[in-house]
Image 1 (cartoon, one colour):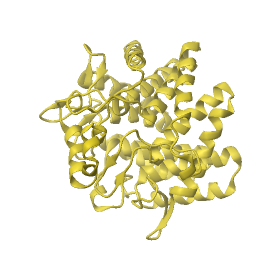
Image 2: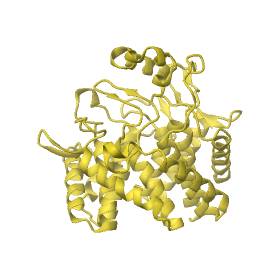
Image 3: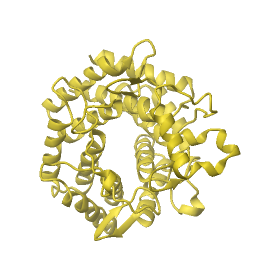
Length: 389
């Protein structure tokens, strides 16, 4: 199967390169030319419904409504991380050269530095959610961290500080802008000014702050990272699970966010050389493996519902099992999950993966940031680790 996974990853990166890494996104509906004439409709119920319409429809209406294909900073970060995996596996310069070109573009895409003071990144579209409206380019913790990880990983190979400096500087943005104390909690928020407590955002913020704290010997940042991580661990279920967040509509347990939590908590523990969270990680991993996968390797979306089948869950499973679990059993499970995803979600004639398969219909829209970038990075990571076995 290794050759098949390698071939699929190669086809995905080739297609991405052919299209200059531009594509469409589940949440890019507000980029429609319609809103050039009616910008006021972006906010409120109309904007939210418009985004959900384009996200949920199995027919892609974006060309009809003038929604262009564009690069997404998080997607570019994922492609860079995948390219670096392939470079480390093959030592072929072409992968490194491509990663450098993409990283140089990311350096030009930082959110307004005058406003935010430090390096940070957001999405290339306005985003309307239930509780808030996020304008294009406003930074968020997840995009910032994946971009920072990509830039820092590249700096480790090239030795260039133009990549490491903004990566490290992003921790200052996370601490100074996103750190929140509210309702007895201490945590890192998802976006500036939004006070919702979301576990994966908090843990990824804590993990990157911990990583930078360890690299720079910043004791204050180490304490903040530990405090935020302890907050999420204190709210872990007795069975090892985490709901998505604290608000009433966040009371669900899903696969890829659970995987995020475990990977981030492991990164933090490794960076700070602590086993304080070992019990939480072990319990969480056990829950993850038992409740978020089926016997045949199907990656479930929710703990109580397999649908929608989504490659996001598959890709995160690869990272969680190989970075957190690390055993031969975990590697075999990852291989089984990949094999099952190819059987159920891959389009051989198009040489890419679909967005989602629901119980009664399939959404085959090609989303670069949500689907293909994640697949490429996770498959490249899997291939390199398998070659080292």
